[in-house]
Length: 69
Image (cartoon, rainbow, N blue to C red; front, side, top):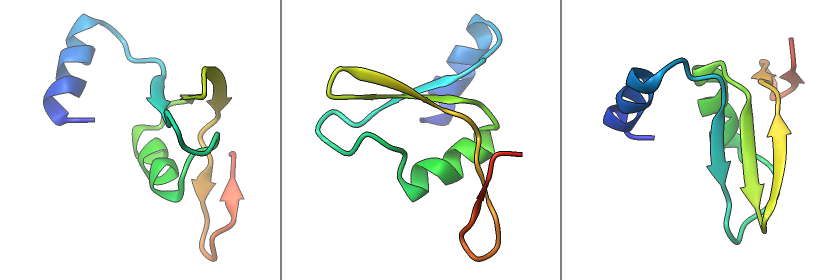
């Protein structure tokens, strides 16, 4: 998300989640998506092939393991 788009969204009110799409892709967050999700510290909703799935923030630990805490 471009910084100016993020700022525009913040000016509208509190950001409580981020909606991301993979129109023809896989129905889960990529490694790059997960890194951005951790940076945002927000739950993400993924839209893929017309379906919505939610993803809690999962922190990537040393060695590549994931932690939801």
